[in-house]
Amino acid sequence: MQDDKTKRGYLLPHPDNIAAEDVVRIRNTIVKIDEDISLQESEHLNLKDAFTRFSFETFLNLWK
Image 1 (cartoon, one colour):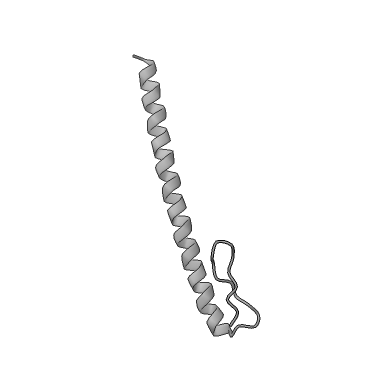
Image 2 (spheres, rainbow, N blue to C red):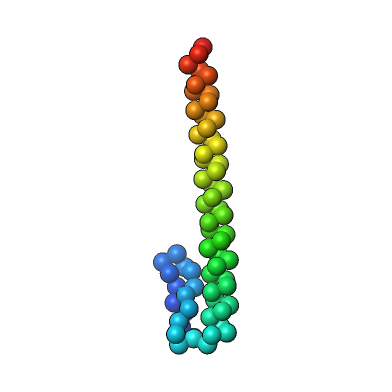
């Protein structure tokens, strides 16, 4: 079985592999991509929230 991967380490299917084996590889890759996207989304939302709080606090300090 070919063990091709992307630069990020995601498993890739290969024409020489048995389809049943590639189904498992594709499924695992989709799960890993979903985990990575969820993590990035969570970090993005945390940064966005921190920026919003910072902007509001900065705005409040202008009125002192």
